[in-house]
Image 1: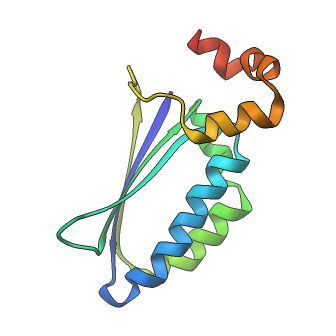
Image 2: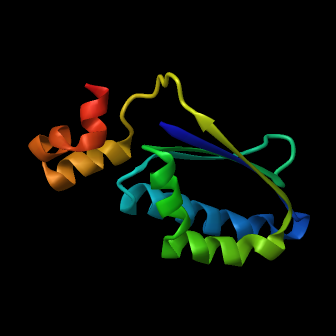
Length: 126
């Protein structure tokens, strides 16, 4: 699994404008990209200008596909001027402890359990 960690420092007057754009990008990534397994959006408890993302993809190729999506390009362009800083790190996930998310359950319902268990990314887990 391929992990992306992003740290944003948002301009103080842009935090409330940034949040809905960020949440829509996360939602679209989870719902529309089969290779996106997790997309956590977190805000610092003491400084609301700090946003942290934890994204898990099946592979680097799945992440590269994410970067080409309309929803990501729209988000990236819209928030560029709202940021003071952005740092991105790429990691290999050695072991994860997360249970299947509601998104996985939605995918099961959408494509059927037999199709879900026969999908290549799922075969790697079992």
